[in-house]
Image 1: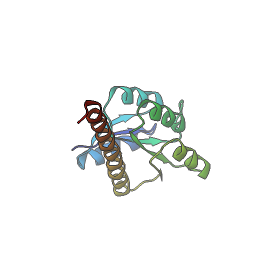
Image 2: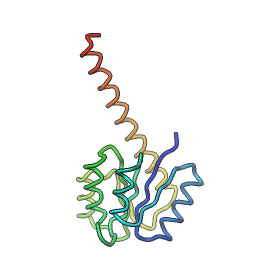
Image 3: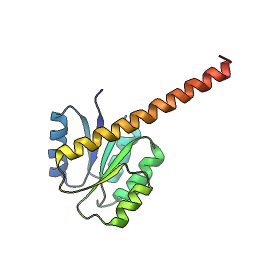
Image 4: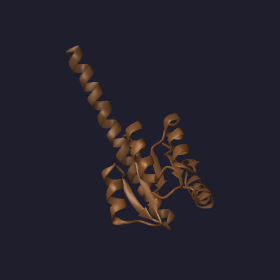
Length: 142
């Protein structure tokens, strides 16, 4: 199964380079350069993991994360920043971020985090499907 990733960062060279690296490793990658653009893609796309920069012009990464989790709570979000503070990391984790990484990032480290985040999302989806099936079976009296 191909992991569908959305990369969100206002640094276009960084995001395009990262996109190429991930695509070479078999990921299906979309990009967005603003929080607003990311939210449009989230609403219209089937995604597994989002890699989201904290500091962007316009809508911040934290505000974007908050809206993503309202729209699609099962998508796992990895926050990225070159200017991390403990407070920002804690806020992101409280809002449902899967993890928090500092720039510059190692591609292998990010890939590992993406795979773990995808596994967590898949596990949640399996549990939800199982609960739905069990509910149907109980209603049918089976």
